[in-house]
Length: 221
Image (cartoon, helix red, strand yellow):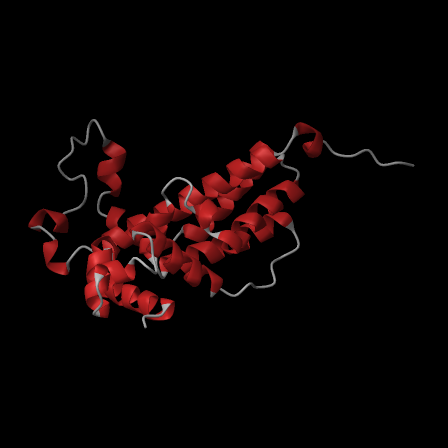
């Protein structure tokens, strides 16, 4: 008998060896040494398999004691999501599909934490959803760009890549880019996620908070 644990272990092996985009029901069945139709008794399709993998992974993420202050709670939760997905970047790519996050069951507690933090700060529920969406886009985008950059083979660099970036541009028309071209690759490689996240959260909360919440309260005598 093939158990769910065996199926997920084999799927993780395939992803680690060949990449998540090469994962298929047929390849997984071959990895397990069973027939494709037998595997369909356990998983409906590739999307169902991905959902099982991500849900299991998310359920293993420990729930830390989050800050009570709403802004700090949002930042801590977003950082937790970032760090979890950075260790498994293919999951970030799968989760970008519309509606996929909503299928994760209780594993969406981190989404709840961010939305609740925004509401506790003073946002309306609609504004809180937008806060989460913007943080999610920023987080997933940062992970995917770095993951795809890391996949570039070391010998893929062309001679031109050793020259300062933008060196072929007309300096009279684009002086700022030409000026920073020799630093661009170094600066782009720096990990500035936390700094950007804090700036993003501050901007979103300031923009989304209702005017009535931003007005100072009068002090009663």
